[in-house]
Image (tube, rainbow, N blue to C red; front, side, top):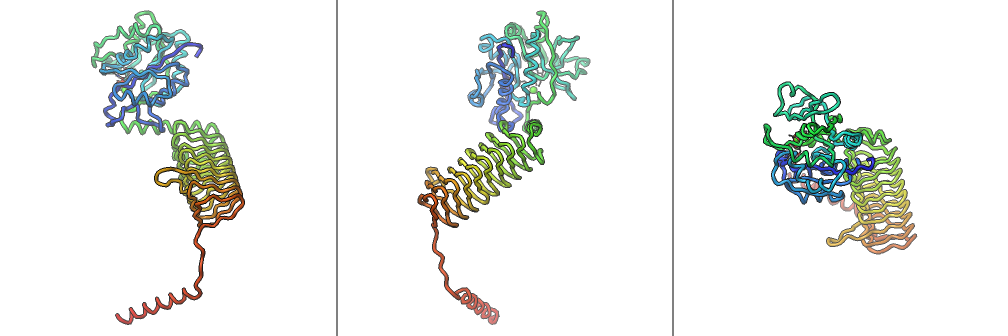
Length: 452
Ligand code: UD1
Ligand code: CA
């Protein structure tokens, strides 16, 4: 943003006791990504140069979850308040940034736009920008004391007068602060208040006393929602899903029953894809234009090119890589397999560790026997191959282009191009034997009822 350098300090040292979990609160996931990962991603998209995260426990786990970001981890050994927490990142702040953002690690719905607006306020001359929202019930929140265009103080609920408690404009927790002045102000915050904590929010009155300008940036309450319990976590998940489904639909994806489609943080779907009800996406899925995902399909780590047809009841696992117009039908599982253009895997099949050439047809009940108990092996199927129903392909094995595998075969050796391979017991016929057996059974039955 306009050449200004920016550090985001993400506070994540809260105990999260009410989650009742061994996992640090900010590592609980929304849409398959830890909450703190969402916050970091929004910061990155808003052009933040560096990230500092303040943690209380699970420092290693939290930094590992943020390993794709340039992040400095700081430990807050005692939990003495939000002002104290930001100071835990003093060394990183002291490197010198134009803007310092303070974000909370448990607000995964925070949008890039809200961060950008807070930063713009600094770029246009404010020394601090506080992100505020109107709360239906402001109990518990810090209230913004606004005078004219600017904020003169933030009063925490416990310290507010009855008059101040009537204010509904609340502190959302996100602040953008002049990076060149923040440390001087933070060092002057005391703990003479109801909770005996060092409140970050006191920075406003201190800065105003220095002649600084503090602006408020209003954001939707949803942006600032946090999770204290798993019930609230589920509410965040629902809100996140609603938001993302809406974005995808507006970008051209059809969803027949959007409320039954579950997306991951990185699900990418091109316009004119069509999703039937009850489709679940794990991380790492890309769906090409015009592809149809039928009901009750589950996809993760899969790449689906344009105009494919998946499901109903299909499972695509990591490494499933489908070329254009490929089909994977009901009760089929595909894992770590390249499926060529127009190839069809239509019924009751497992394809794992395989490559299938263009326009091949894999018959019902075909299984790649990819695992020998120790290692996984490759099944390579050429283009234009016809694999008859109920075939077992015992890997490693290769089938040449244009080959034809007879139904019910167990294929243990490579098949040459254009050959017909049969790998099954030969059928024999005993004339009249069925009638003999039937007659004998009837005689036994008659004997039994006579003896009664
Ligand atoms: C805070 C704000 C309040 C605002 C509200 C919005 C202060 C003093 N109050 O209140 O004005 O309306 O958020 O949700 O800032 N944390 C630490 N170390 C600490 C204390 C907190 O890392 O010593 C972290 C927490 O993990 C959490 C964040 O800071 O991510 C906010 O702390 P919390 O105790 O939830 O603040 P609130 O009382 O909700
Ligand atoms: Ca809180």
